[in-house]
Image 1: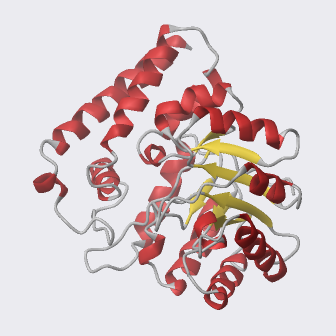
Image 2: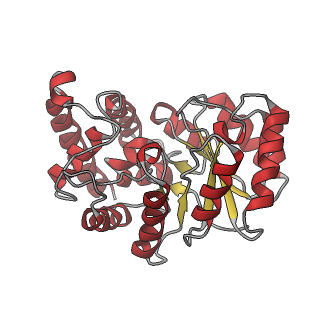
Length: 310
């Protein structure tokens, strides 16, 4: 299993039309935007994609379309792993496995839906390994919905030793945990990819193979620069670390609709409809539009500084 599912891995949005259908033309422009702005792989059908609000037909159609739009330029990984029962999980995972993706990503709280610990995780994992094609690479995702289920070191090793796993989207938000997992991974090819902006640069220096946080939907190019210069001793790197961490604090202010408003400003797609954030973010989160103005202005300043730095 040598599929590259690391580096800068945007957790993809799903554009919708005002009447609540997937906006396929907007999706095409969005994929191009990710690729042009430094994505090393695309994570389609994840929580940022609003997968819990997508039907199985929508999840599989979305995955197939992203694979088609990527045209082999970057790997595409996808999850869509949301169901409770083993029967429903088998159906959704088999369907997703058949969409042409480079890796199928399992959600940790679905592998052990009864929260029964390592033995429950082991049992769920064995089920999946029996269901999906033997030659399909796998990933793990500590998705926060419906609850965050961090894997133990024992479970990490269990997955590593199957030889099937190529990526973990780490949502521990803890640098020591990232370091420990990186050490456990060794040269196995099971990449640990941190998703927390506050520790992004430190995690990169500790061996996290990139970044897969929600603000890859705002400035993946800045995270890409940071990934390749994380150890550089410069004011630019230090100040960019701070900017990225602080910008990401806007996430609770209506994400993913927040990111969709951002993309309507860019012209990537035309409407910010969201099935998850079903309220007016400007009304609930005071001055959020001004905050977006500051984030966009900050991005442009850092892009100019990076150009001058080179």
